[in-house]
Length: 377
Image (cartoon, rainbow, N blue to C red; front, side, top):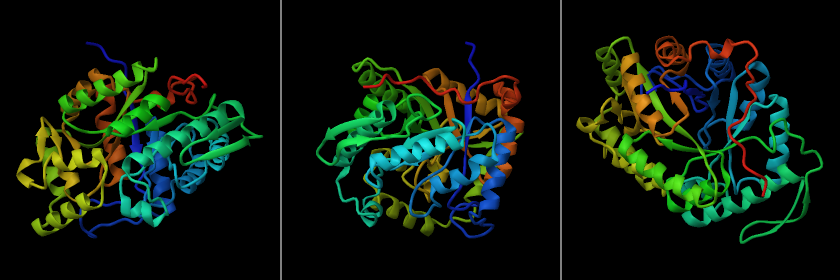
């Protein structure tokens, strides 16, 4: 089977970086100079975009993205938009501004949130499914404002009375593309109704296929077709043996006690179906980390979010990525520790095998082209 080149994104570690997990050894703080180095490297190397995370332990993605967008040329910025933390009207105005500042390189990652204690600290006290009701209402208002410049809406949690957006001329029409990851039934309903690209964390292909089949069916019931993106770490070396050695080195400073404490905390802090699926892949066991051929769950021993990495030579990792591409994924959002060096390593070793080595330098390519659009409601 022949494949179109994947769109490979990179990750910006706005909570800090390092060569080892679960230790301060070799820790790099998230200062703007280091983050700029990573973003400019990703831009120069040909990554399609960069994901900025969100959370109380991260620098604010909108502030960082606004600072770095003018210092890059082609890179798209996938920024978290948090329903319940900001009004839809203000979010719409900020979205237009940053889309114009970046010349059409803004992508929006809708993050409902799955850590109740952290959400409560910011004043959001709704339970799991009600947060998705709020997200649905937020996106209805936000989309209509960007598409039409006005909206009237009364919902369970949000209201917009004769809301107007006087300056709603974003570069991308009718608005910057919406990306979203949610594994629960409530989350999938939001995806089916609103978003352009559905995201999922790296799981064994059979589990991912089940999820995507459900998402496709829910979107099709609304007459819609989505794009799909996979979030996963990459550990690529010249040989499989070297890659597995690098993976084991990444967790070489973790004690069994540290892992047990982290696993207890990660489970207690979340009601996210996707996060619990990640934790269930390995259940904190060092001897059960290869959960599928070359899919390693070591990152999830101590960190929330995506906990899996594809490990191997460029040829091995490319083969595994093709398995996911065959399921329908167009975009891979990758990362590696530390992110500056690994951005170069992945580009130099893996890009040529995937056929994406010099896409960023093709003359005449329109880097503002968005994923497939949604008809305005």
